[in-house]
Image (cartoon, rainbow, N blue to C red; front, side, top):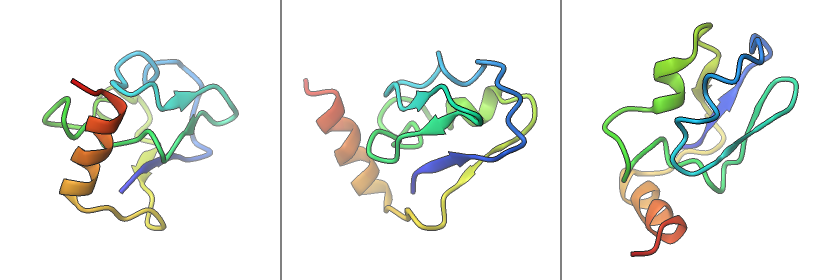
Length: 81
């Protein structure tokens, strides 16, 4: 499942750098590209953007449900060995 950023985003940049897939881009609010978001599966044990967000405005997108193996496959496509 991809994540999305709600209107509560304060545009602080905290989430941009820790994203292993460069899925977050500037906007108002910031935008997460669902084709690049793997919820950090393949890179980290927890969602890095959620971990650093000071206002808890990054949530699972209910319209983009993906099983763990699909997220891992997406990560591997984005980062070929």
